[in-house]
Amino acid sequence: MTSKMFYAKTRLTTLHIRNALLKKFLPLFFLLSLICSLVVNSFTPAIAQQPRQEIRGVWMTSNDFSILRSREKVNDAMGLLRGLNFNTIYPVVWNSGYTKYPSQAAKRAGIPFFFKGEEGQDVLADLIKQAHSQNLLVIPWFEFGFMVPQSSELALKHPDWLTKKQNGSQTSIGAAGENAWLNPFHPQVQKFITELVTEVVTQYDGDGIQFDDHMSLPRDFGYDKYTAALYRKETGRNPPRNSQDGRWVRWRADKISQFMVKLNQAVKAKKPNAIFSVSPNYYDFAYKIQLQDWLKWVREGIVDELIVQVYRNDLQSFVKKINRSEIKETQQKIPTAVGIMAGLRNKPVSINQIQSQVRASRQNGLGVSFFYYESLWNRSQESKEQRKAGFQAMFPQPAFRSAMR
Image (tube, rainbow, N blue to C red; front, side, top):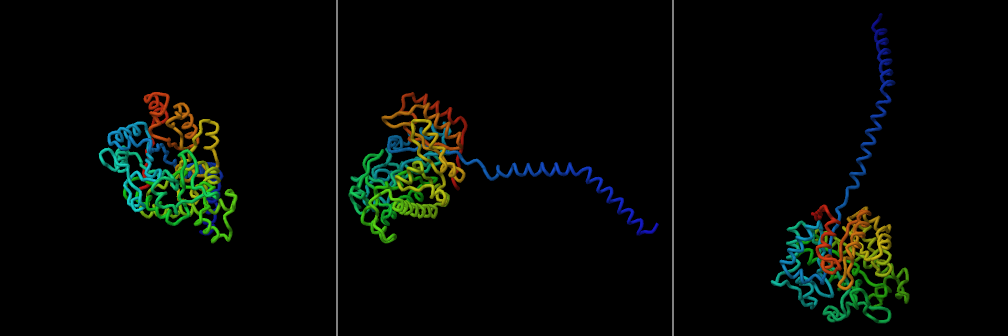
């Protein structure tokens, strides 16, 4: 046999053997390939959809100031909240036209300061120090936003900073009583608010800054001379008599959004890791009634966490609000929570109602924050021990949050 014939015969035999092996083991190869594909695909969503940090917060309001003024009471409060597995505090720093911390920006605007601690201490600095020692985040809360009492030093010293309704009125009546509104379109107002906010961010070791439903403007306002002239300049039209006119609503809402973008940039320039938090009303009300297009803010990436205020006694109504599409959209992007009413001075809320709303929120993958600290325990029909036991049952395990550091 020649070498060529031997080579050809050997090659033919090898091909037969290889084909036989492929025929025999091909189903096994296919099965292994399928299994590998399924395993890889099963891990991909888990990597892309890491669970977001759950917000378990509480607002500390002016009603809590007897606690905030005392180092001992703050120490007890922070220890209690940590023991009950809370993780975030939202202390008020701007309310009723006054700061709750010593502010040079407020001093320049002629606003006096009244809110020292019992030992002369800076209450915000003390709270942040004690909260951090308990591994609690502190996000100072800019409560009143553009809203100020008409009798406040700020309103009296800077009347040109106020906006008004079409009938000339400068006030509206809401849950906080009768108040005037700073003009969010006026450059001096924007400068003042920005100075206050950046003061808090730079002077204190807080973890961010929060703005609520008052970082807005009721739709009946905007008929002052400055805003009317600006609208004519940009649109060629006078402000319409109908305050609900779609183009007029959109123009004012967009102006507020533009300011919020600039404010976010100012905060991040001072402290890049600061949490830019927003706690508005549900979207339809926020936009149509208060010109607060917070969904646009979320979509533009300037909001780091969202807490939607849903103060309802009826569970069905509560659940309907927390199932809205804009909340579902937001929670895919950032930590999202529900603001729950824990009680008011003259309107206690039962622990059963609180528990049912917390349960509904968490079943929807949402965190919670309670309004407000003292009403967690002391503005209720149940005893303080019953209330504490109720919160312990809600949060039996810790949910630590880390700052954006």
